[in-house]
Image 1 (cartoon, rainbow, N blue to C red):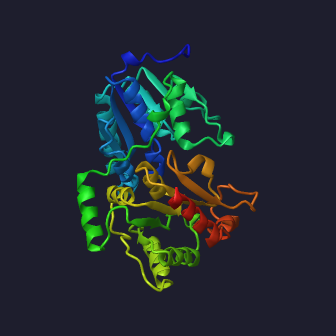
Image 2 (spheres, rainbow, N blue to C red; image 1 turned 60 degrees about the vertical axis):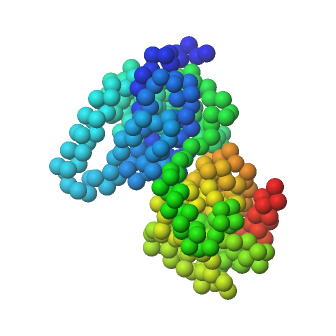
Image 3 (cartoon, rainbow, N blue to C red; image 1 turned 120 degrees about the vertical axis):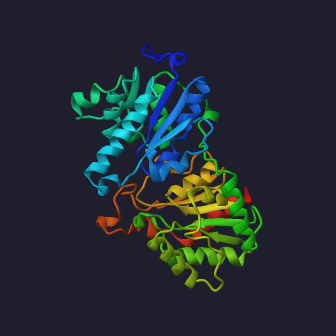
Length: 360
């Protein structure tokens, strides 16, 4: 027990802040589960960007989700000020006892100060000075050099205040919901597919430097087709991702069923939940598949698989062992948006990883 542990029985309302991208928000989902397991009397709220809220809606440990429009500033100063004021009023009305801020976003310090929570924990950030340091009562360290998985880094915020999660409490939690399940079942029926009879492939990412070449992905799909596997493709409703799917399809002798651009995040989760296997790159869909308990083959380039790999599921990470510079975190070699360590991965290596997981 830490000498400055927080008395959990004194906590009635908690706000957890995670203002990042979709995958980051999903990887914070165990924080809510652990808090609820150790302080079952507490009401636990989340603050996230509006476009990422679906990653946490229906989470059984979450009472309320507050959201921020990522683009609210573009609507003018007056609208921005009104939205900020409305958010502050909504948060203050909840009278939080504890605030858990999981990133180094400056907004967390502002919210902590304005809400007046008795306890607040945040990441230790050098160079922020008294404005940051005086906004929180506890700080957790973030040893990036230790290659610690992001899920564990999030949970370190709880460890710092005396909450130590059991192994079975650290699973990702994503609930697709009945509505998504029903629509997805209908879409699959229209494609002539049954549950667990297909491999789910999501080849794209909003970050092009994380993507495998379309020629190689098409070659992998052709091999899997020749072995009798059914494939379903997915992609976000973005022009670049849809274009990638089209480029893959044109290279196939027999195009495969595709739901590219047709699915919400919840429906994407429902799709993964019905698959035998997921294949993709370091992206939110990979984390969604892991949250649904589906084995995953994940291709990694400049991003770190130790920090961002599939969590708590059977998986194979395929990454270069001939590029000592990875993981560099750079958006392509020299900022070119093309990563040699990823584009050089062979179809044979990825295919072998798929065969290994299917055989387990």
